[in-house]
Image (cartoon, one colour):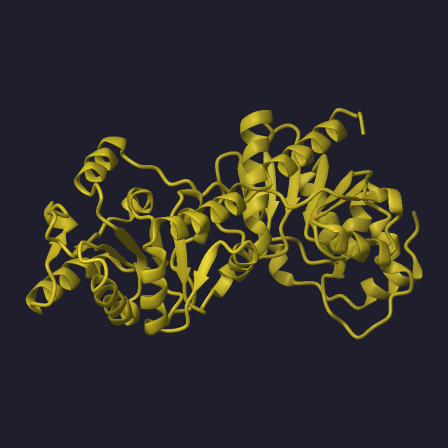
Length: 398
């Protein structure tokens, strides 16, 4: 199909990024699925989809994203090509994908036109709204409608998103409301014998966990713990610093202050009945502490730059989440959790103490944890639908 006036004007305005000239890794042998995530918020569900394609179908996957990261087993991670005709052709000449899946709705007209010319089927998944790659003060007559018409299907997260695609020019039959895809699994492992032994030791004791705590938040957490101890004198705080190397110093300083009865995990000290704070130091044990603590405060959210750990780690393991106002790159995740009333947000050290006291009531923590688990586990059926569509396309049945 000849380029439209809108596409011609768009292509004239694009400049090549010479960095794209760097060598690409070798293409995997056989059939290849290309997945694209336009940003951090959509990378997790696309990683989850990539893993299932590799594990269930034995298909190699190319996953492109602005901050691609390192490649995974069966998944080649790369930056996307600049949206120019020359770069799009070079990219597709090298990778030769059999199908292309774009998350969110970011439109890359040059790449998508070139893919359509090669008869590469394209889908939009987790669709939110169509938007061009660059925000530019220019008019591309009919371009959005033309690009959307190239897709085999558009799978929108909700009806509002579907309306946005239809308004952009997508045909009614092209758009379907399927919902949001599942996130990458956040279930952390645990040594079951260790969990069982500690669970027995902590029987009937209230426990909370400060996960990935930054040094600047330590005073606030200790203040909250002291306040909660007034009403729950057997309360145990498990504290794992964001920088594990700080654990030894922190445990020593807390014990030396004379204000706390402290155990250090690194010294194989157990949280006996008189211990008020257990200082942990091993990042491999986050899964253990989330399972043992009904309530978790996510470090980095009160005075840091955002959570030092993925909020879904606590959510999927049934620990009720408290967090401060700093959500960083996890803002979309906190937004979903907040909309489901699955977290407790706090603004200060005083708020943290009050929230902790409230959540020490088992029924209240359980309600938050159940809502968070529902958010963490949603989307599996949507991912199944996407997989079935990809398989049908590759088998020539769609």
